[in-house]
Length: 254
Image (cartoon, rainbow, N blue to C red; front, side, top):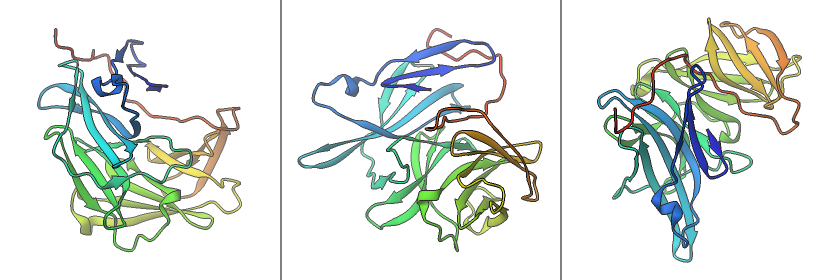
């Protein structure tokens, strides 16, 4: 959870939380880095939780990216150096950072490869602690202003808003490009759901938000079921799904 420049990791099941210190680079007076990609996940090899951050700073000699992660076990930030990074996120309307989708031990973001001017999926392997790139599905030609990654059941998935519809693509075999399949098309016409964004599945139903102010539910056949408000702020509010756990976060004293 971000609060201005602070980051908190919070377990809603226990109420326990930890504040993560700012990166040492953030404390430099000459740095003005802005986070545009971030995520949180578990490194099962080291029994460690990582907060991953990608940020940039614009200077007279160009744009500089900073890639780093915070280890909950080591309680320190580590910068990933020597990595060429041509990826940018220009798909959020208010310059808000994009959160990574956690699948198969890696965080995933939809990005633009600036050198090639191609839409790609950027992944960070939490065990290998390195970035890798995957192409978007063949036949996917939506404008990325209205799409994002999410987790459909247990699969990496991509949703895209068209004219009165939402297409859902699923990678049925991880890292196998040919396994991408357009699985569902949800109809928005007549349901007064102009800004639908799916974010999770519950008992087979697809749950999403409409403009960040109400929850919307479709069944596994793409049929509209119901919607209900959850936020009175016209600007909307983000919603997230979590898995209940009574485990404590690791630390260097564990």
